[in-house]
Image 1 (cartoon, rainbow, N blue to C red):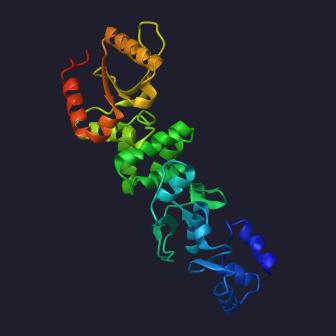
Image 2: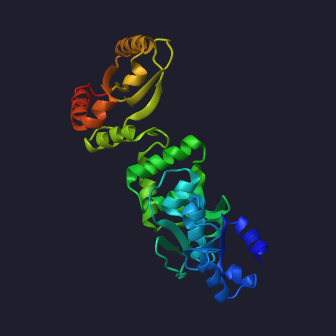
Length: 306
């Protein structure tokens, strides 16, 4: 019996359901005794692990939540985005989508009911049933802020997993969902991949620029100047205003070589009618409002593009 249980659990992140245990021949009382003696560890109602639940991987917790919600349940929304690598999630609760009228409420699981989820919307990652990337991108629109959604799309584009046709298919099949309106507006206003940020500090700059009414800068942009020199990697480029914001870190910009290169790049930018603006990560972190206020003055003082 132990070998049979282990064989099932080996394909399920060390997990096994009560229904599976009963299929193997265990009675409810036997399952209870095994749990009482530490041979099974309860994760959710109807779902057990062969190892202590605090030793489960993130994938193990995801699959446990899916199994706990019954047939047809799939990982979705923020949890699916984390599994697909679209964005991290530090939430304690796990998102699971179930077919309409399915009802297995469990503590620690955010259950989403759907009447439009089909086999076309489901894939398997790490042996976990999960919504496809396109369906996940649609679902995210209803549970995270607009800027976070853009960032998730940019991340997918950088990873080579953004599929516009698949996302448009989701919009066509879910036209009345609030998420569809949000995604359509995002696609109309945001060039996917243009504002991918590498850190929370970069993200802070983008968010504060928007709050100040500034145009959204291109992030980590490779700028080719007409002087024939090598391209310049600009931290934040306000292309219409021709303003290049550089956020220098002490560790990477204190070397003699970088010091000289920074000055050369500034001269090249100025000669090509760009305004180079330098600040530091420490100033961005501790004096954000002052930096953004000065940046706003610089950009608004620039002549309108012809």
